[in-house]
Length: 84
Image (tube, rainbow, N blue to C red; front, top):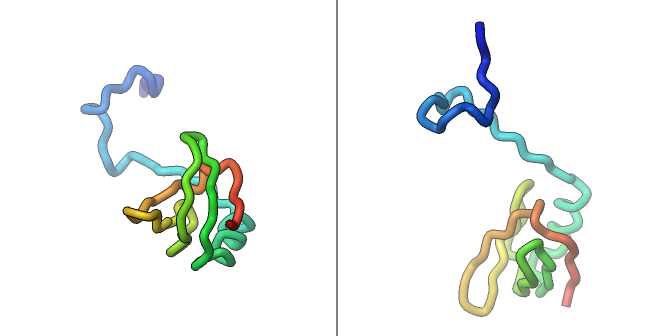
C-alpha cells in the first residue's frame, strides 16, 4: 500500500479517527504550578508576559485570572514563572 507523506495529505483526506494528539507533560512543572494555586504570578511566555492569579492547573494548561478575564495558558508556552 502506498502511503503519502504527511505534507501531501489535504485536511479533507484525513479521517478524524486516525488523528492522534501528542502532548508532552512535565509532571515536575505541573506540580510546581499546582503549589502556586491562589498565588499572583507572572508568566513569561513565547508570546509575552502575562500576570494574574492561578485558578487551576491541568497537565497541559493553567487557568489564570487576570484583572479582566480568565485566561488559559498552555504550559508548553511558558518560559518562566515568578510569584509576585
